[in-house]
Length: 437
Image 1 (cartoon, rainbow, N blue to C red):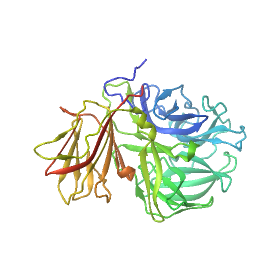
Image 2: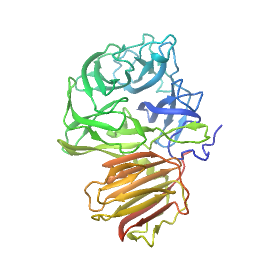
Image 3: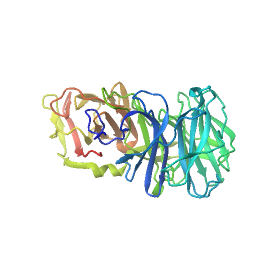
Image 4: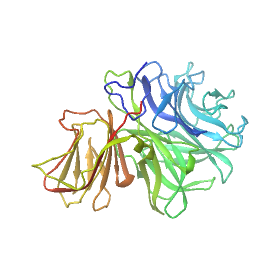
């Protein structure tokens, strides 16, 4: 039995009690409960034996891990997928039943098979799951095709499935009963593969736009009428970090919210009983309209309930000779600061021994060999979330964001700033955070 307090255990991000996790799966909100199923190896801290784990929460922060939901079978191991409530009972299992769609990874079956798409359902609000007895519902289109994301399209009264095919190719399928599917459009996301998501948001002009998202945090914004998705932007980038991957949004979220969570791949958790973590959930919105529209990602408001011991020293100056030292020894931090733009020069922010750099001439924040654009603000605002094993960065209320796995270096103070010349820090607010376990 773990107390979730090991040396490198994240304290406000989700981790499994033990063993490997990767993609979030089957995200659905039902009867006041947020469900997160997830890729899990119940037997080892390394990848393999893919099974759907299951956790629930009433606030997207405090999670309770339950029994596993989907185990490997004769069709293969349980790869990624999605979940949605069948409000009208179109699948034939009853109204308000949760439908779960997943890839059966036949390459890992005995004997080996093609990857196919399968269906399961829950009649008790997601607490137990039963596989459809006539699986698969979609046969193979391409080697390794996987990761079905299914939504209900109200206007055309049909189910829509976004599916990864191969390389950078995806497709859309449609169905009225979730069991018989027609492929009707292929979509390419250059340089992107796996884990599609497909969902609508309103832009600032009040127009419905559709986002087609791929695993690396790149996306298209366009229109969709049930017959065709028409891209209206170039391929845009939302995730600028090294470790945010396979993000998915919750179905049936209340109050029109569009909440997303990512797997933070590639972390180091030496000698821990678990391996890997999820990101902080973020709320999505669109900024701008027409072709000048951008997806905005911002930490959920529920995170504020963990804030404590706020330090707000106000405007300060950071210099080379006199670094700005924040009065805290906390390891869990929610930091917001803004710096007056200069024509050139650098600002160095050291977080628990790990440096990041504001590079004014290049208009970017650099961390771990990645560059995050600062936008056009005269005083760019930067928010940093620091946990035991991750740093997440949000620029100007989420117009750019980046997820990084992280282990601390040696340090005397958890948070310091200095500059190659006098640098005005216009806003500085530091919140220590409570753990969620």
